[in-house]
Length: 163
Image: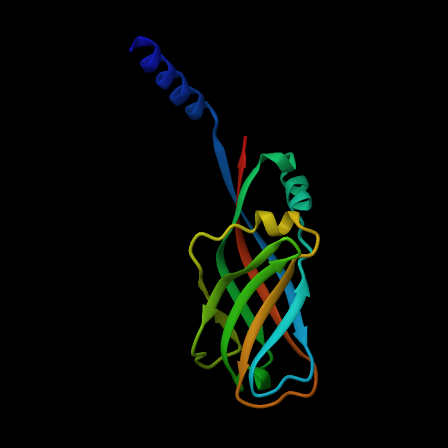
């Protein structure tokens, strides 16, 4: 009984000594697509922020990264394109990870800048460690667009790492 209590106390003490730090970082990317038709369409861009680059910015080892969450998403469209956009859905996918929803907004109500409702409990770390990661913004359109459509996606990331 003493050994068990002592072991539990030691585990608790070791966990208390290991502290995590949370840091917020804003990143921005431009997603695009061409020849888009009425209905759902996808705008895409490769993920350019790798886990190793984020770790280097924080002056830590990649192995010390615990998670990369999303706390806010803002999507900006050109005025003429925002007028025909009905809904937005931001996702991420990579070579070794299934598509994951990050945020959504439907219907869109006026303006050119939209704050998406962020999905709960997202962790981008496996995607940012994977070389084939891609941002995918699904836009539901009420009219065709034959020219290129671009959207600026601003994300606020919450990076958790070990000290």
